[in-house]
Image 1 (cartoon, helix red, strand yellow):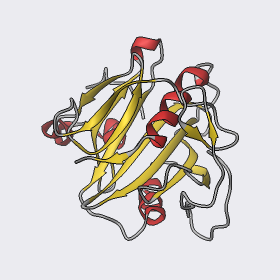
Image 2 (cartoon, helix red, strand yellow; image 1 turned 90 degrees about the horizontal axis):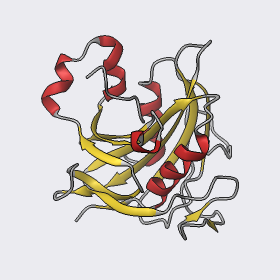
Image 3 (cartoon, helix red, strand yellow; image 1 turned 90 degrees about the vertical axis):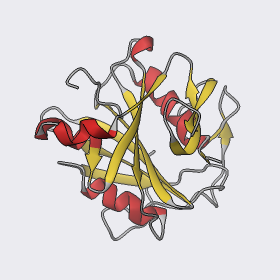
Length: 215
């Protein structure tokens, strides 16, 4: 498991808690080169080459979302998680959120991955779910939150924050969505000063703006 890559947005809104993400409604959208609507200030979404999620995909998930060209999904086996050493456990578990899928960008030359966490509990709202996820993230700091600005079909909230050693911080982007019987978080982790941002962020933007419930 040590060879797994740690895979797995900052328009602030008023908040009095660690994270108080905004709902997707009430914000204007722009359309990137992929045709997927994005919010002002974020990069265009990557072109979609397929989807992941649902019962018949490589990752059985309660959501479906678009994946970019050369990004490969792989399920995280449930029986692997209990055997993880502590230094790796936080990559695959954040409180009650457990990683069920990784979408790797290694074929693009990136060491990053989108990690999909699922909690079988449906939170009352997406902001509360995201708050719980971030609080379970070791050394999370400098949290900013903002609107997701998807089509509004799913209650959602988003945050970006620093995660890791203060001298070697990584930047994490996370979006939480509510589905009928679960809560899902998609998270992207990359070096704070990564030169690969132009490769990585468009894949995350595509994923968060194409999220729909699995049938």
